[in-house]
Structures are given as C-alpha cells and as structure tokens.
Image (cartoon, rainbow, N blue to C red; front, side, top):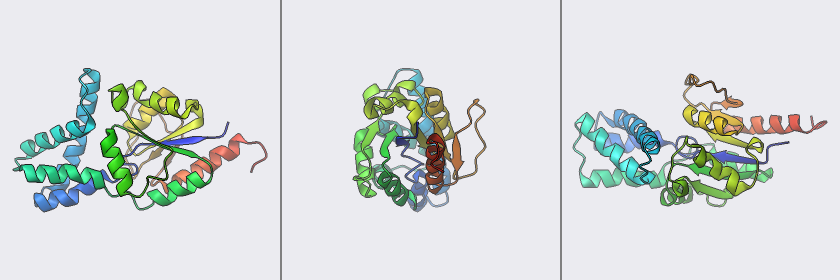
Length: 233
C-alpha cells in the first residue's frame, strides 16, 4: 500500500529549538549556545526519567525544570523575567525555512498530515499558529492524554488511533534519531531529518529514509508510493 499519511515530530523537526540560543546569548553573553544545547538535552532526559518512573508532568513544566537546572549548573543568574522570556520563546520558535512549503506541497498531493509531539496542547497550538501552519495539519497531537512521553508505545499509538490508518501506511518524520527508533519499534516506516550529519544510534534501527532537510522527504514519499503502485513509474 502507498503511504497515506505523515506524522511529524515538532521540536527540532519543524521548529528550530536551537534558535533559542540567540535569546540565551542576549541574556547570558558567551553562554547562549552552551545553555541552549544543555537545556534541550536535559529537557529530553527529564521526559525519559518521568516516563520510566510514571511521574508525568506536562512538557511545559518539564521544560521549565530543565532550564532552572541548567542555569544552576552553569552558574547563570536566572531571574524570573529571564525565565519567562526563555519559556515564552517556545511559543514562537522559528520554523525551518523549508517547513511550510514542504508541508503545503505534501498536503496538496493528498497526504494527511499530523504532528505528534511531547509538547502539551497549549505549547503546540501557540507555535503552530505563530508559524502560520494552522491550516496545514489535519491533527496536532500531544502525548498529554496518555501521560507518557515518547518513546513510550502509548505515545506513538495516538497517531494510528486518531488517523485510523495502520502504522505501516504512515511515515513518521523526526530529526531526533531516538524518536525515529521509538517510532520504528512501534511499527511506522520512518524518515530521519538528519540536519547535523549525526551518526546513527546503536539501537538496531535503520530509518527507511534519511535526508538533511524536510525537502528530501518529498522524494522519499514519491519514490515509496511509486514503488507501491505497479506501473506508476
């Protein structure tokens, strides 16, 4: 069967989380890049720990906790004003330059598009609207209803449940290789947006497709669907 839908991770895939470094540098000169990278790593670490321990908190709170820890770790004076500025930036993260064009093209070809993210609904609604993507997606899904973060299988199941399409007919797209692994274990074909040229995780998973930007996803979907329909090439 050809692919019928595409599920996208949000942070790092459609929206540039490391653009936070610009604001961080303004607030903490000389430490912006370090803080942005450490914050992202700690944020993801906390989602894993909370899922493993069944101590769920909404992603907004996890993100705040990670920021407070990282500033303490780096010895940075995090005022309430600076904290609110940093967290508020999550509502208006910049999309990657090709994101909107690729999404509109894929939707125009009849693909059903969804986001499946660790972000809680309020965070996702804000960033999607800010990026002008509100009319592009059929569904914007948060893991919040299952109270488990990716890579829990219950999180990935939200996609198949809402779309009503078997996992094998839906491609899952992420820039995070750990997320690609989780989606593949659940049963999705996967496309890894490997923007930084990172090595593959040693977890026994090879993505079905890989590219350096979302633009490469268009060729992957076309080739996959042509191969699924005899005589289409």
